[in-house]
Length: 319
Ligand SMILES: Nc1ncnc2c1ncn2[C@@H]1O[C@H](COP(=O)(O)OP(=O)(O)OP(=O)(O)O)[C@@H](O)[C@H]1O
Image (tube, rainbow, N blue to C red; front, side, top):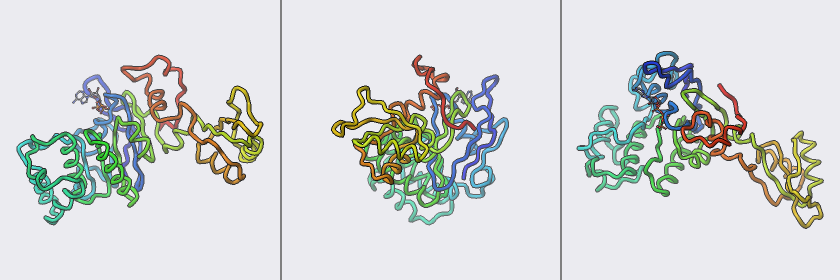
């Protein structure tokens, strides 16, 4: 569990983090999103004791990071994969951490294997590592102490497509074992696939936080069927608001009729299944994707804001 409570950080007259409150819960992956300069890294740095806050608290497993006696076995941290001595080999970096944490020596080869670094690569100096190799080593470092919490800043940075898939599986498995994952990323597709909960920050303030399905449900679901009357009746019974969206309504049984429903796809699919209505299409309505939500929520704070996005409504719970 990670608890951030009314956290504020100012640099001179500039407020980088402004009264930020959110939690990242065990068994869930929490995606931390925001435009460049929004305050994500500053928040994560405060969380792991690298930057002191002006106000508020940041707790991991109920403690300030600095009060954890052996933090590496409770919290795995990857903030900057390049922040290691460039003259050390990958194996040396892990061995130093393994000894500092008092872990058995076998953890080093185990973790090298987990993150897919070969013997040969582990013996190279970090200055000769590719970005993706550095990232894999950083993940090995974070996972070395078998922690219950992971705090990762842009973990997919530099990973190739297979590496991103691998990291996704690794983090899912980690969360499914009841651990807590907090990760920041600009890769919205990755977050959309991976995260259970979302926290969106803009100009240092939280603009939305909650379960991904709730936040993305705002724009509703598009559903098509050759049995619109039966589906409409079932949706009415379930109390779900809906309307037809096809310009020339079908209903002949040959052309599917398209309905827009103000609920998420899972709820609509369940209603259709329960009523025995076959669907030809079931998907989040246009504009319901994470990218649209992100741009709409942060439109006021985007340095490259698109003017029309300012007109999109804000959605989601603001803490
Ligand atoms: N030590 C510092 N002194 C002055 N300003 C700082 C300092 N550290 C961060 N900032 C400012 O705080 C703001 C938030 O920075 P932060 O690195 O937290 O953003 P971010 O959301 O992680 O951005 P990005 O997505 O670009 O990594 C920025 O305007 C940054 O310039």
